[in-house]
Image: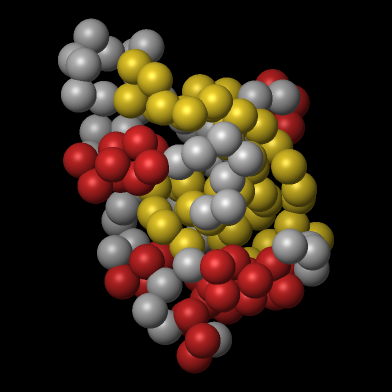
Length: 137
C-alpha cells in the first residue's frame, strides 16, 4: 500500500463533506506532477486529507476506491481523477506547525513542495502522522 496527501480548501470541499457524501471523485487537478500522482494511486491506498489555506491541518484519512479515470470536469484527456472514500477521522488534527516541528518529517513533500495538491507520503512519514493524529496504521 502507498500513502498520499490530498489537499482541499474546506470552503470548497471539506473532510466533513466527504464524510457526508460517502465518496467523491477527486477532480479539478490541473498540475502535471499532481496528475502523475493520481495516476500512480492504487485501489486501497490511503490519502491523508489536508485542509489547505483555512486550517492548514491533516484532518482525516481517505482511501482510494477507484483508480484513475478521465476527469469528468474537463474534456481535455490529459486530466484524470480518482474516487476516494472516507476511512478515518484524525483524533487530533495534525497541523502544518506540528509537521514543521517534527525533525523526522523535515523531508516530507508537504514541506518541500507545499503547493502541490496531490503529494506522496513515505511509509515512515505516514506512521508518524498517524501517531501524531491518534490513529492506528
